[in-house]
Length: 170
Image (cartoon, rainbow, N blue to C red):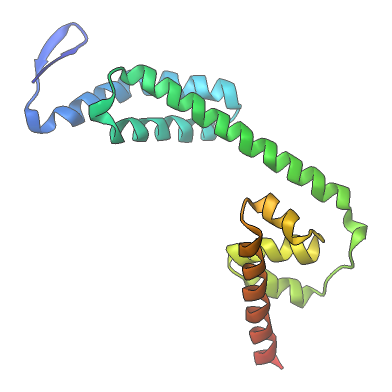
């Protein structure tokens, strides 16, 4: 296979052609893509994550992409939009949590909060929102983007696990 690198024409063996072309594309576009994304999201670490993810997605569709540069920028744009949506959801959740205020529920015992913190994250988040932030099951489901039935199951599993721990200590 023959490819152009700058002004020189370089012969590339078939077995390593994909890797060489991918490296050239990375060297040529990554820094600019990451910089452009950073100007949109305002966070250099997130920008590098998004730019890297755009390259990963390009490489998974390598044979079907006709314009790699265009694919990278369109993919990065979509990932930036996803990032903005996630930030918007987090801001809305933070506002809802602030609206509830610290005085809307009694402070839990430190040993109970310690036990809750030991739960796996998939169980801990629903427990904290349901029992500590006084969200309804539907509100927890909406905040965590999970079905209500899943939240009910997580709460049941968490109660069973906590009961087992408390029963073991008694």
